[in-house]
Image (cartoon, rainbow, N blue to C red; front, side):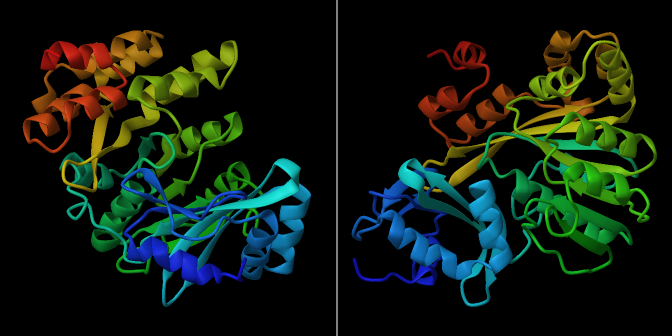
Amino acid sequence: MPSINIKALLKNIVAYKASDLHLVSRSEPQIRIDGKLVALDMEKLNGKDIEEMCYTLLTDKQKKVLEENKELDFAIMFPDIGRFRANYYYTMNGELAAAFRIIPIEIPSLDSLNAPSIFKDLTKKEKGLILVTGPTGSGKSTTLAAMLNEINETEHKHIITIEDPVEFVHENKKALFSHRNVGDDTKSFANGLKFSLREDPDVILVGEMRDRETISTAITAAETGHLVFGTLHTNSAVQTVNRIVDSFEGPEQIQVRSMLATSLYAVISQSLLPRIGGGRVAIHEILINNSAISNLIRENKLHQIYSQMQLNQSKTGMSTQTQSMLKFLKQNLITKDDAIRYSTQPQELINHIGV
C-alpha cells in the first residue's frame, strides 16, 4: 500500500475529536470516538506498514528498548498537532502494533470538567493520600491534571510527578513542577517515590501504584506530611481499599490497615459513560475518610464501608456510583441501559430506577 505519514493519521484524532488511534495488522487504522472504535476509510495495514510508520518516531534508545522488551510506552509532542501517549507492542507473527492516545495540551480546570465541588476542597489539603481510580480510558489522568492545575493556580508548592510516561506537562504558575519519566529520569515508580522524599516536595503524583513497594512508600509519604495523589485500576472505592490491603501478606496487612486508616484521605472512582447526544459523562464515586470509615479500615470491616458511604452525604461529601448515575439519569444525560451496563452495583441501580 502507499506510504502513510504517521502525522497524517494522528491528525485524524484531532479532526474527529477522537481519543485514540489504533494501528493493528490486517485492519484499517481505527480511531475511538466517544468510546467506540471507528475504522478509517483506508486500506488495511500490515506489520511492515506499521513498522515503517512507527519507527520514524523513535530514538535509537527507544528502538532498543522496544526490541528487547517487546513493548514500549512513551509520550511525544507535535507542535502543529498535539501531544500523545503511545504504546508499541507486538502481536502474532512478530508484527508491530501501536496505540496512541491524545493528551490535551491545554490543562483542563476542575470547572471545565464540571467536577464535583469537593474536588477543589481536596486540593487544599496539606497531607494525605488521594486516589483516583477506574479502568483504562476512564479519564483518571485528566481529573488528576485538573486537580494539580487547581493547586498550581492557588498555592506556592513544589509538585513532583512520577509517570510512565509523563502525560500532562504543567507550566509553572504559582507552583513549581518537577516532571519525571519512569525509565528515563528514574528507574521505577518505587525508586522515584522513595527519592522524592529527599527533594522537598509538597505534593507528589504517582502515575500508577503497581506494586507493594510503591503502595507502601506512597502511604508513608502521606503519613509524613505530604499530599500524595495516585491511581489504581480498580472500579470502586471499596475495591480500591481491598486491593491495597491485599497487596500485603499476613501481619503486614494489620500494619497497612492502620497506616491507611490514618493517611488515606479520599478515593475517587471514575467511569465515563456515553452522553445522550454525543460525548461522554464522568461518573464519580467518592469516598472521604472520616472517623467511621477509618475505624472500619483499622478493624478490617471493609465490607461495611459501602453502607457508611450512603449516610449523611450532604455533610460528608461522599457519593456512591449509583447515586451519581441517578443524578445524571434525572438530568437526562445518560440512558438507563448504559447506566446499568457500566454500573458496579447493577441490581441496586435497577431497584432504584424500576426497570
